[in-house]
Amino acid sequence: MPLSLNHLLSLDWKTWVCRNNPADASPVSIFAFSDNVTTQNKTLWDGLPVVWQHPITATTLSIVTTATTADTGGKILVSGLDSNWDAITESVTLNGVTPVVTTNSFIRVNGLSMTAPASGGTTNVGTITAKHNSITYAQINPLMGKTQAGIYSVPNGYTLYVYSVDCYSGDAGSGTNYVTFNVAVTPNASPTPVTFDLLQTTWLGNFSVQRIVPQIQYQKTDIEWQFKVNSGTQSVSLIVQGMLLKNAD
Image 1 (cartoon, rainbow, N blue to C red):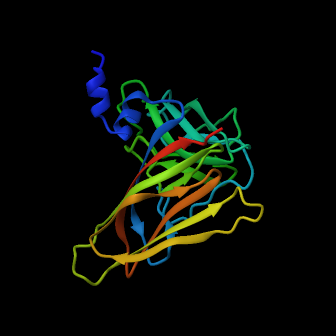
Image 2 (spheres, rainbow, N blue to C red):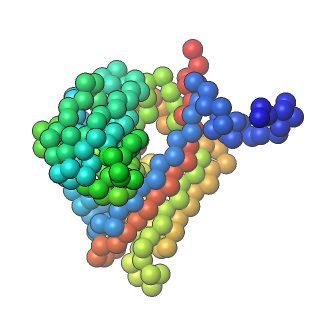
């Protein structure tokens, strides 16, 4: 049933965007997790403790699962940016442990998601990776259905407005094993890009930033949410909520 005018007017604009999905605005929700966060500061992603990295130049990707047959026929949506930093997606059908190469070349991979499981399945059984040569740029861990990585690259022609960041630690709360949080930002639209740390802080249990004024990241900017712990190895999760808005003509 269509919404009445009064109902539409009562919606805040973020809810309206999520409901109507206009071409010039879309919600961005980033959910990341790993139980392999160590004392070394690293970007939070599915492949920890391996250091995450992005492609240096636009390249095709080999999509493959470690499940010999259980994931065969499942469909994976690759979301990222092309050589011009324009947003692109491509659907790939898994062929077991035989890599399937994308048609498109990606200079950034913002995520992988399973849009259809293999026949008789409900989600991925094996570890699914997007690689070029020996480097893994994105990974879906078993039974997860999508990547859980604290990374995002802003498409050409758009600006990302970050409204909230929430982090949670698996520490029991003894007060001794704190987490250090860092946001690394690289504005690639600059003629000489420089990576800088936007924010650093330590916390126990959980950490939350609710912004009255959104934090702005411009087109062609790489954002990495990074963590390390005071001692040992523990789990950390991240939730980022933002809005991607098309730049004015």
